Image (cartoon, rainbow, N blue to C red; front, side, top):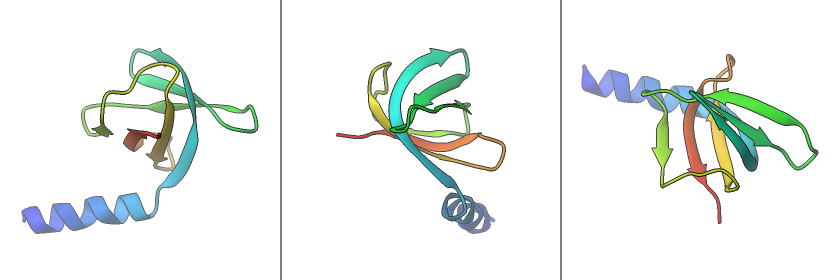
Length: 78
């Protein structure tokens, strides 16, 4: 059963939209990312989100989000 859940998680990541930019604000469970074109995108982060590393305001980040802007994975970029 765990294997099926792992496969479902991989499938969701494969279908995710990738957002890259600077983390400009953390507002409760939402992270606001400013993309290179200046557009700000709000993504929801919760206990299901895989957070890689220590992420703080001002960091350059990459987020993989589902169709409802829920972050599946968020990580800091160099």
